Image (spheres, rainbow, N blue to C red):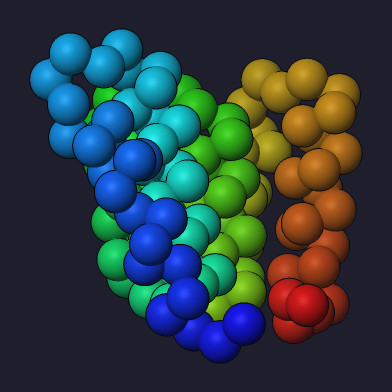
Length: 116
């Protein structure tokens, strides 16, 4: 499917992200999902990063959100920005699984690998 096909997926996560009653964890997950849809479906890098920034305001230590930010930046060809996000993440306290995922992503950045 081409870019723009995901617009129909916006209403449910957007409603959660904008709800005053939703727990912050649900809002963070909704914002991260919207960010991926925005990037993967529509190629809107800055909008996606803005959504992830909002998620990080709610949950500053979210490894998943920071990782997604690094991946989107890499996929958008912003290798230096991606490396900065991932290196900062790698210097923190991560589970073995996250440490490996971040290291692999950082290696892809270093190799200037494009996203599939």
